[in-house]
Amino acid sequence: MDVWLKDILLESLQMASPSGSEEQIIEFFAKAVMPYVDEVNCDVNGNCIAHKKGNGPKIMFMAHADEVGLMISYIDERGFLYFNQIGGIDTNLLPGQRIFIQGKQGLVTGIIGRKPIHSQNESERGKDLIPEDLWIDIAANDKADALSKVQVGDVATYATMPTFLTDTFVLSKSLDDKIGLAVLIGLAHNLRKISTDCDIYLVASVQEELGARGAQMVSETILPEIGIAIDVTHATDYPTMSPAKDGDIRLGKGVVIPMGPNMNKGINQNFARIAEKIKIPYQVEAIAKPTGTDARMIQVAGKGIKTGLISIPCRYMHTPGEMVSLKDADNAIALLTEFLQELS
Image (cartoon, rainbow, N blue to C red; front, side, top):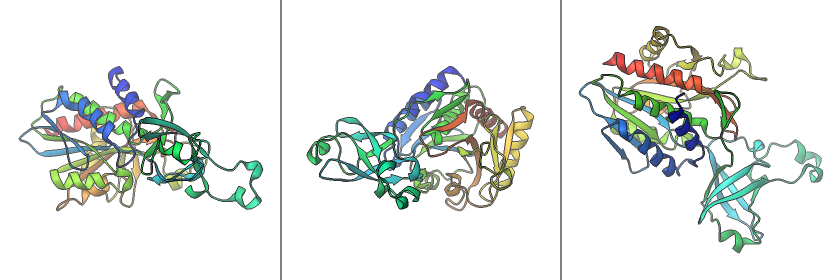
């Protein structure tokens, strides 16, 4: 990945964007793509739509801007905070996690607490956790002290910093789907290198983690002839995963081209042909039902849209330590650039 795009990715990963609170990352995305398109607008719900005008077929590329997170739901008399989860989170992973709360005056650091194992009885040790078993400690003296910093309805995200484990493997929160946004920005940059008459829309969608709500709004508005979602998919190259049950998807082994009823056969078969043509590695994933991506809502918008999906392998999705390979993201950019070039 080029240094400029890697810097954009790393900066975006440090931004908080839980579903419904994507404003900071949307503004960041808008500035990043503005030099390469004719206009950039945001709709009433926060989706960012960048438009490169053309007289040819209307093509939409979409990656989601939101991430999983927490929302403060109650503050007790001692100043401890309780929360609801935004999106799909494994509650058992939360104890001991540091978080950043978007408070009244800025970021407030907290830690998610649980009764220590020394004090747990036998039934408590074996149970699956629910949010009510946990709390957030911000070292408040009491409720009034806590309320001077945070309030019910404030959102929080994991307090992690991006880390490179190798030259290409990056570890961070919210790679789902900020790696997709980086691919979208890379594609926007490449629009200068190709001659195309396509009418191109590059969309950073909101609220994907709550059922692809942003994708539904935007797709109904734009009604493209072709809609392509860019997201992560589960890597299966680690212990406890079964290739026979979970598929064989590996980090660094290429962009993933899913096949199944949520994707137009012609588009995704064409992706495979293009990958072979430009000699980039790719992997095939079988998904026999609607995907958990924006593609699910793109496909059924209006009278129906020809839909494609390009995925980046990701380990440990929705945890504080998601992991992807930048090589796979580079392959996605190259594939989508050639796809646009051929449409022209």
